[in-house]
Every structure is written in structure tokens, then in C-alpha cells.
Image 1 (cartoon, rainbow, N blue to C red):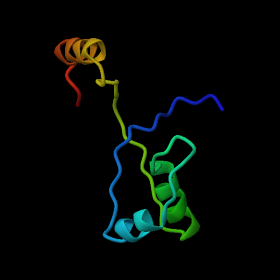
Image 2: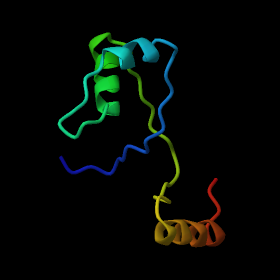
Image 3: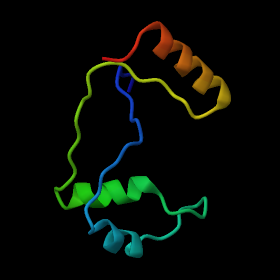
Length: 78
């Protein structure tokens, strides 16, 4: 569904994450998926989240990093 929220991809896990990772099977893409880790924590009732105030922008490419830099110069994050 449409939303004003994003998943920034910032995750914090306890040491139990390594036990969870050892149980994972590769996906159809042949990779272990972070969503499977998160789903394991959901199943155990141990997943939490927080909504951060302020703004966020992608910086995963040279173009988006340049755009993020310009945003910071224009309006420093609080």
C-alpha cells in the first residue's frame, strides 16, 4: 500500500541472529534474504521498529549521493 514511510535498511540484531541465519535456505534468487531474518523475529514476537523524525534520502548511487550532499548543504538535518 502507498505510504509516506520507508524502510531505511538499518537493522540491529542480537546474537541470536546467527542461529536464525544458519536455518535459512537460499531464495529463488539463490541468496539468503534479510526479510526471512526479520520474519523469524516476527514469528518469535521479538521484532520492534521505530519511526524516526526528520528526513532521509537515498545515497546508494553517485547521483543520489550528490543529491543528498546538496540537500545537507541546503538544509542541515536536525
